[in-house]
Image (cartoon, rainbow, N blue to C red; front, side, top):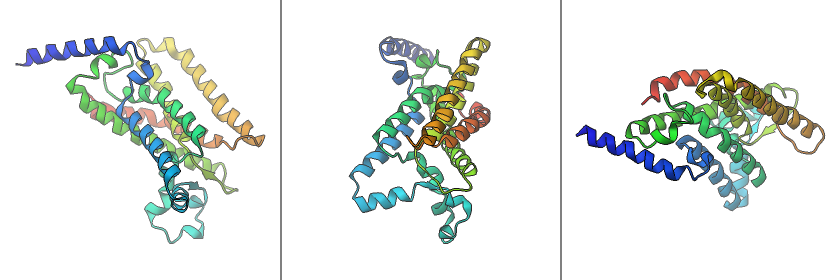
Length: 261
């Protein structure tokens, strides 16, 4: 009974991969966690566009991360723990406009699938398109998705706290998923080295990618805000990136237990 089942599954991925080769790899390798996060970001933005103005303003304001939350400002004293600290998560899904959303969505689509796949023990960017249809992989994919979403949120929380620590003497507000995605990018760099057949061959490209990221998303963002052109929170990018690199090995250890097939 088990042999026909095994053969049918072996042929199915092969047949599907022929069609998959005609698709963009970025979309071909989308995983549950990446799709869920992207979907929430888009749905939240759509709701904000169509919600009654007063309701939309209050709802969004409750989710924007205000650094006063961590300063111990008296205006937050009467709030419960969840209501007070929810913005550390909620701000990650609030975007200032379509352009802001599109830029973050594009970055998530670039690095999210690769990083999420790395949380599936035994999977890599080469074999994933062949194994992802196997029944025994489905549970690992779901576990990896849950880990990836938690990783995203924790990186975002770290980005918010980092933004606060670098702006303790001024009041600031934070919205957008760029700090969270900066953390995902930090994990992406380690995953690229780990998942390459010969890690040493990708060492230079990985280092180069990290340097380019820091130049564009930290130094470039700093210069844009300093010039008064675009108020980009470079501090959140930097804190998220550092947190992502520190946390990635921890989540990898967890994935070896819960996201294996």
